[in-house]
Amino acid sequence: MRLSHTPLSRRQWLAHSAAAGLSLSPLLAQSESWPNKPLRLVVPFAPGGSSEIVARAVATEMAKGLGQNVFVDNKPGAAGNIAMQEVAGSTDEHTLVLGHIGTLAVNPYIFPKLPYDANKDFVPITLISKVPSLYVVHPDLPVKNLKEFVAYAKSKPGQLNYGSAGNGSAGHLAFEYLKMATDTFMLHVPYRGTGPMLTDLMAGRLQAAAVGAPALLQFIKAGKLRCIATGTSSRLPQLPDVPTVAEQGYKGFEMTQWYGLMAPSKWPKAHIDRLEQEAVKAARSKAVSDKLSQDTALAVGNTRAEFEAFIKQEQARWKPVIARAKIVPEGV
Image 1 (cartoon, helix red, strand yellow):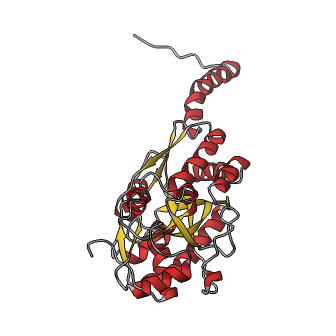
Image 2 (cartoon, rainbow, N blue to C red):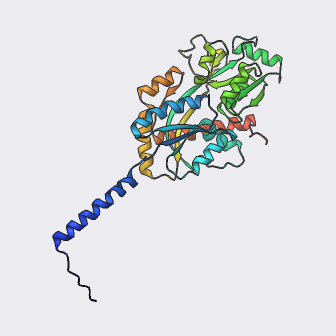
Image 3 (cartoon, one colour):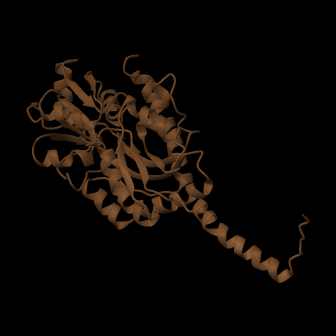
C-alpha cells in the first residue's frame, strides 16, 4: 500500500503551528510560574522566641505579593545546623530559611565542620529585622541595674547561671560579650530554644539571660522578669527607664540580634529575583514595621547586595570574640 503525502500550503502550515503553540503554552506558563504552591519558611529555633515573631510577621505580608501562603516551620536543634542543612539540600524551590547571626556569623567559627556552607549554599535575600538584646534577671535576684548585677556576680564567681537558646546562639554571644566587658564569671546553660530557657528563667532555675526584645517585653511588663540593661546604643521607647549597657559604664557597648531571609543558592535567578522583590516590599511595609515595632524590633528590608555585605561584616566582627571566649559546640 502506497501512502501519499500532500504538501501543506503556507496558510495550513501557519494554522498548524499556531495550534501547536497554543497547546504548549499552558505547559510553558506552568514551568515559568513561580511560586506554584505554598512556601515553607524554616525557622532554625524552637517556638516562642524572637525568630518566630519576625518570621511570622514577614511571612504573612510576603504571601500577599507572592500569591501563595508562606507558612512558618520551626525546626530547632544543633544551633540551627539541622534546619540549615535541610534547606541547603532542598530541591523543591519552595523552601526558605530564616538566616540569623548564629547560623551565618557564628557557627562557621565554632564548629570544626558544618553540614552547610553559610556563604556558598545560600543566597542572602534581605535583612528583615534587627532586634535589640535585653539583659534580664529573675525578679528575686537582689539587683536593680547592671552595676549592682556586676557587683553581685563578682561577689559570687561561678555561682550564677545564665541561659541561652543554645551554644553559639545570639543570647550566648550577647552574654559572653557582656562578661568580657564587665570581667565577670558566670556559668552558661544552653537550651534547645528561647522558649524552654525562658520557662526555667521565670521559674528561678536560672538567674539571668540576654534575649531579643520581642520575646521578653510581655514578661518584663508583667513583672516576671527584670530588665537591668539594653544592648542598644540609646534607650528604648518601650523601656524608657532602663539604661543601656553603655550608659552604665561600658562605653561603646552595643548588641543586637538580626534576622534575614535566605534561599538555597541552586535556585534559578528568576525565582531569587522575584523573592527579593516581594521580601523587601514586605519587610518595608507598614504592616511589618508596625508589628515589629510593637515588639521592639526594627524592620529593615535592604537589598540582596547590602545584606550580603552585612553578613560579611558580622562574620569579621564575631570571629575574634568567639576565639577569645573559646565558644565551642556542645559535647566538644
